[in-house]
Amino acid sequence: MNTVRLGDIAPDFVAKTTKGTLNFHEWLADGWGMLVSHPADFTPVCTTELGAMANYKEEFDERNVKVAAISVDPLGSHLEWIKDIEETQHTKVNFPIIADEEGKVAQLYGMIHPNDDVTMTVRSVFIIAPDKKVKLILTYPASTGRNFEELLRVIDSLQLTQYESLATPANWKNGEDCVILPSVSNEEAEKMFPKGFVEVKPYLRLTPQV
Ligand code: BEZ
Image 1 (cartoon, helix red, strand yellow):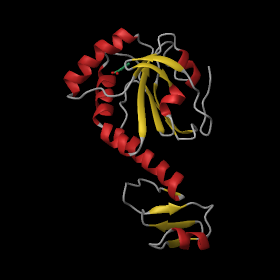
Image 2 (cartoon, protein in one colour):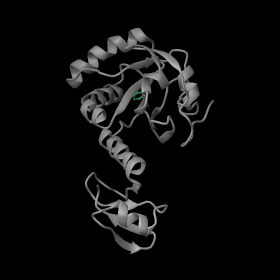
Image 3 (cartoon, helix red, strand yellow):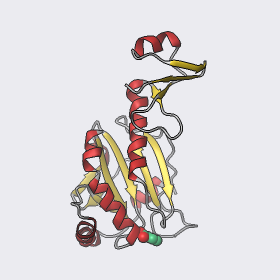
Image 4 (spheres, protein in one colour):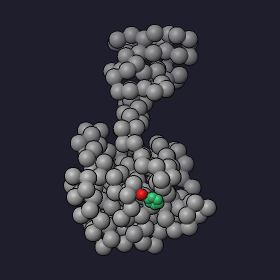
């Protein structure tokens, strides 16, 4: 079983999907990516999750994030299940669902936790930056559906770090004050953040979101 850790290059793969063959790195190109595993097709929580993910398409597009789902179910099953997702969640499934029947991608990413379930993929999320490095890993149990608002919040935070040298404090929401990265000196911060910053402590400096 492979283990993917933060900072690793996301393992590349070629797989069958509901939108044709996917060459993962090539498909990501120079954008961000989010790979989301689910335990099984035709299950209730997964149905609501993939519907929610489809309904967030505009939000992912705005952030230049390509999304894909994956489970070990066969392609035919995914294609049949999509009809149910679209009917019950009032959406169009606009992203590829990977048919990882042999569990090759699941093994590469450590998506099978045998002490939880020997065959089904757990509910994991991998967020990948344009340099293909893994920036976030989350794993939920099969019984808990993920919060897509939280995933967008993390993407916003990751992009603030990547592009603005900012971090985000506890419970941060888009538009609230951000934390200046410790690697940025006060002199640099004065130039970088024209709205100024408040030094609560030398290591805790807050600035309005750019
Ligand atoms: C679900 O998606 O509802 C689910 C899948 C596997 C186990 C339990 C729940």
